[in-house]
Image (tube, rainbow, N blue to C red; front, side, top):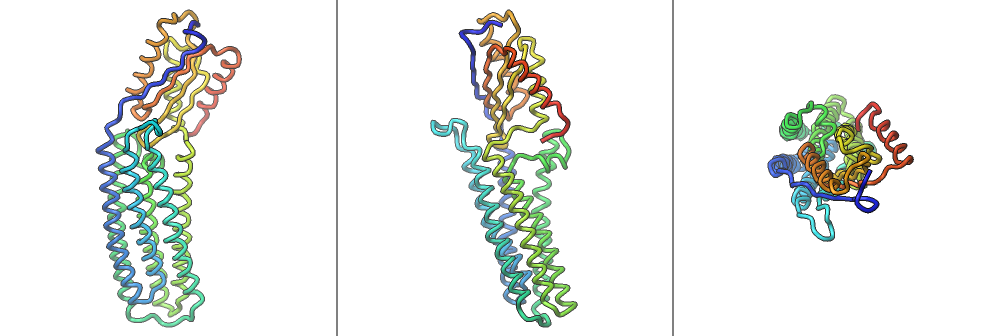
Length: 346
């Protein structure tokens, strides 16, 4: 193979994708969730004070935490769209994952810890028959379930639209979707609906038995639910902040595309990293076929990168390192091909 000098390393930034519509839809989903949570938080606090229900007060803390978290998500949507600059040449897309991490911490601290406190208080207090105000608690929880359910349906409808846009199934898009703001809203609303059901169960069992221990147990169950949701969201955000690769399927497609190019003899390395829901970095080390004229190298690199941008719009930063593979490089190429062809997706 002939290359200019010892190696040719080229980098290109692809055209910006038209993500305004998707961001607008996510922003609308967040606003719906915020409005629902604010309304419900006020109703739960008032109902909890009137009825003295620890389960309802736990759910009130949950809604307050969710309301504050929507502010984090709106900040994420705004700040992540800042244009690249000298200090951040790849842009600010990872802001989404940072603010999503803060939202997860908020769910844990404001929701989970307060619910745990309420549960312990209810279990340690003397049991007594419920007051007449518990009818208020039941009504508030029923209304909260309907409102939270409507917000969840709005978020899931967006997932359905994105699944149709990407040509994948609803369940795959729900599991593998890359928008942390939307994923956080779904996690919050799903936990909220489940939390309402747990609180209703605690209230009804208290009404049926006259024993407040059931409400304490419901509060502890809500606390565990919120801790689990917070852990899941934080784990995902941490993975993206540290720097996760694109899904295995996309890596397989890109690797197959590169190996199919008539000018490429060997793909010895393929590294990817997601920068935001609609931006990713690709770095590939390739060896061109023997006899390639050095004057053709730049033309080949430009064409390959342009084709990558056209086929995978999210891959908007492409680096091609054109170098002689050698014996070690060919071993690396076989290992790369074997790893990518393993069953399973990420």
